[in-house]
Image (tube, rainbow over all chains, first blue to last red; front, side, top):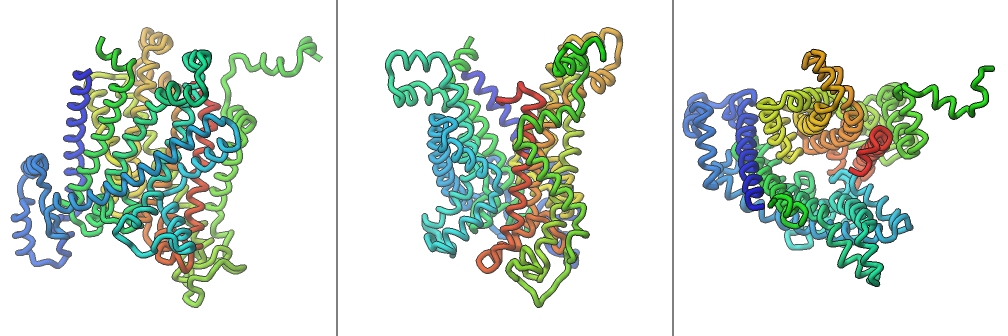
Length: 309
Length: 301
């Protein structure tokens, strides 16, 4: 099993290297020189030359890439053109906010999704099942900006439950967390329901019932333990995608996270910052997928034994 | 009267169908019979298509017609969905916006399916270094958060409809290639492909005539399920100001302008949001229905 995980890790690192190269190339085939887009068309040519040299943009692209890679490994992503601060410093500050938002959204999504998924499965085809599944379908197909704006309109404007203006304490994260978690809650609920229904038909559930275990015991001791495996994987993937920056949600609620930083980098035509945020976000996604895969391998005895033999 | 008149009609029909493949029309009829939700979704999509085509006929206004005396008006008889900050009729802009959404749903999805199917078949059939190279490339594309990847590509290419097509094609081809590759791997070992190869059919012809047609059912399902995600990505890009630019109309752009007037003119963003949700739901239902009809094996996946 360890060998398997090591192999996966090597693969993940290779993909990350490819991602770094892809981003680097994508941002350099830009029409027009990066300096000119930064300084404007009528900038003094002498200054343009000096800046090109200072930023090392006159060197061959392979040299630039290797230097960038060397910096990235040690946590140095260069200096932001538009904010005049080091990219890693900016990302560090932004990531803190993204983590708060992601954790709040994930807890909301998982609680709501798992509980409603279990209830829907137990009461299959009942009123609650239909209600939950209908709502979860809405959750899955609503664009984040729609959820976010509806929440703002109803809870901040109509009901005055939370302040309209941006607040930086924990109350400022309630609506964003719900808006961001809403989609995930829908998919978790649907997955929990379907895997639980599948598990409940297994023979060992009948055995457990025959041995006289009550409904609750069957559910918690036998069914859920097996049904949660795919759900857990989905949770890992969801968390990593939330951590990689909720672009729309952070923009609407003015949360200074990684996603909003990427948007600001684009509007500021700030290549080092954009490069840093994209690389960082993608690395998080790759890490999340790796954790999800490994979780599966560790938790599922069938896979665990299969890979040992 | 034929000699068969003792057989019940149903059986006769079944007998005549032996050896006949199901045509598109039969599949559609089966879908309509088995899945009412998919049928309703199909009709809704058809209505959106009609609205997009007939936009100039359906509304007396132009999509960029300013009327500064009638800014931010609530829905009324003249303006069924109200007006925006420039006094433009929102219903009119919705109708024209449906053109963008439908085009953005269909064009890049078709392009990414063509590209993905081509590369997927090549990778699966040829194997070896071609497979390794293409699949590592797909891994890299799939690792990106799709929204961020689309943003970077739009940043590099600049805004505009054509560039949205390109960006979405680049974002989506990899998942298609993955699926087609795995189907190809399965089909490559099947007896009829073996047979074709053994009588000397060229590799290119095997791929085109024997493997590709068998991928079509899953491609159709993938097609209907990729359209809504493309529509959502476009609306998010336009929402961030990286897609369609004013005065052109796109639902995502309309939601974004409406955001500044959320508390004074909520209809501005509500109508386009609802339209996005409706069309996304409709395509998802249709895709699910098609999957059940075309490929019973995929039902539980």
